Image (cartoon, rainbow, N blue to C red; front, side):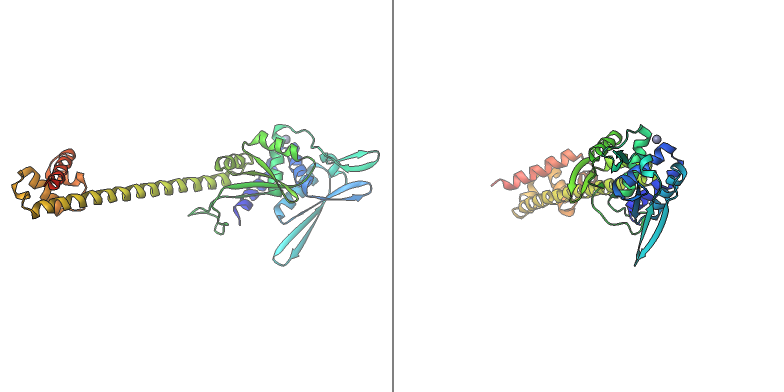
Length: 311
Ligand SMILES: [Zn+2]
């Protein structure tokens, strides 16, 4: 199962608990952009076609319970894929505010009826479950085994071009910040690219498990980034230590070869000896070994280099 499907399943599972007004707003979003309409007995009857059995079932239930309709659910098996056609009878479209009658002709409405705040969220759930998709980077340890690997955070709603697309953006931004819009072929694409905005959207839609999974990925990635940064930092320090040590050893060996080292003070000779014997030690390690301060060891090593450069 994909991450997107797990989020949709979570939303659909909780639909029964919503108010009647919200359930209808959900169905309005589902049918408003996707359905084909047939004229039956002077009424426009919408048909929803989807691969998501749960979406088909939830849509049926809402129409049955709140719009006194008896939808027909037909399952079609095409090879591996299943397809579900739900045909809604009676005046479902009319009741949802999807059709209007002008001089006896039936037309699809070009505006969405005004909604209260609770219904806006339900409308967004309907949009996402029907036209939505979301991907996040795959967690190292995830509960979704065959999750599609992705490197980026992306949530989108690809709505077929309907007259009320502008209203959709208004409704989306009234609930979650950050939505951008673009057109793609026959669709209008509403999308989020930022993990934080996607998290807010998941919470708004009640996809708590989905949000937790996103959070896990964020934490995991930040730990990994920090570890990488630390490792980089450590190896940079090692490089620096090695380069400094090489320079010191060259200087000490030069002093040794030209006999100058023997004539130096015991303090300098002690540090020179310690460095030669411990080429990979850091300043702090040398200082600890000699029971001196780091600063002191540094000064003496610096002095040795200076002396080696004197003619
Ligand atoms: Zn409501």
